[in-house]
Image (cartoon, rainbow, N blue to C red; front, top):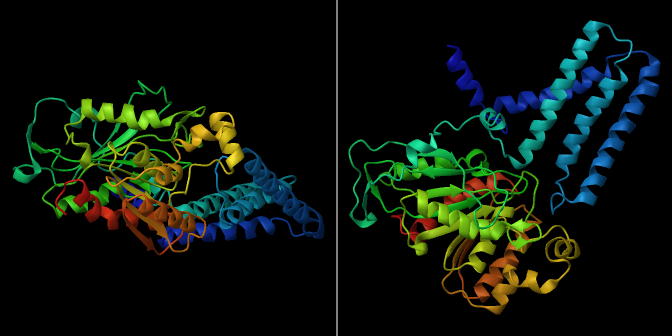
Length: 434
C-alpha cells in the first residue's frame, strides 16, 4: 500500500494539475498567515513595512549580483524575480515576527514559511519546467534506469543491418536509461556523468546497426535535462513501439562542466568543451556501444544553450555531425556581450572566436552536406529573432533547413514537443525507418 502511494506521489505533476494549484495556494495562504501573525498596530505600521523593504533590497541585491557575474547570458523572465521576491517576502515577514512569539505561533510561522518557499520555488520551476514531476524534482532514478554494466556490454552480440532486421523473440517492450562516465581523455574537460538511452532493439539478442543521436542540455542544467524536462525515454519508447522496437541510441553528455558553468561549447580559456564533445564522446561511443559507425547516420541536438552548441558542433565538424537539431538556440555563443565573451575566451582577440563562430563559418563556407531542423516558440521574443537570423545564414550556406515555430516561449512547452515533431525528420536523416 505504501509503495503504491509513493509511486503515485512521485508521479504527480508540478507544472500543471492539482499539486501545482495546491503549491500556488500554499504560497499565498502562507503569506497571508505570516501577515496576520501579529495584529497590533505597530506590526502593520513598522515591522511589515520593514519586511517589505528588506525583501525588496534582497531581491535588488540578487539581481545586481546576477547583472555583475552574468551566470546566464540572457535576462530572466519577469515572472522569475516576482516569484523569488514573494519567497523573500515570506522570509522577511517570518524574521520580523519571530521575536516574542509563543511556541505554537512559531510552529505556525514555520509551516507558513515552508508553504511560501515551496510554492515560490515551484512557480519558478513552472516558468522553464525543468522538473515536471515530483520524481524529477527529487532527482530520483528514472523509472527505466538500468545498471550500465548490464546494458553497455561489449560482449559479442549478433548485429544485423537495419534493412534485414526483424524483432527477435523476447525483445523488451521498452528501452533503458543508464548513467555512464565518459572520460575526458583528450580534453581534460571537467565533465559530469552522462546518460544513455538504449532502445528495445539495442537490448535484444539480435542487435541492429542503430544510429547515434547526441542530445545536449541547457545552461544552467545537467545531462538529465532531456530525461526530466524532455521526457526523452517516454517519447522514444512510444516511437520504438510504433517502429518494431527501433529507435536511436541517444547519448546525453555533459556540455557544461558544472550546473552554472558556461564554457560556450568551444575550446578556449574556459575549457575544451568542443574537444570533449567532438573527440572524447565519439571515442567513448565507439569503444562502449555497438552502433552504426557511419557518421552520416549521426546527429547532434539540444535546446537553448544546447541548441547553440549543436549548431557549433555541426558547423565546426560537419563530417562528424551532418544532421543537427536546434531548439531555441542563440545566434552565437555569448556570455552576454561581445566584449565580455572575447575577454573570457580568447583574451579579447576576435580572430580565434570568429574561426569557430557559426555565423562567421556560414558566411565564409558552404555546407551542402549539412541538414538542420530548427524549432522555436512563437512567444519567445528573445530567441525567435535570433533563430530567424540563423535560418537565413544556414540557407545562404547551402544547408538543407527545416524550421518551425510552436506555441509557447522559452520552455519545455516548446522543446519536448519540438523534438517529438522532429522525430520523423531525424529518423529519415539518420537511417531509421520513419
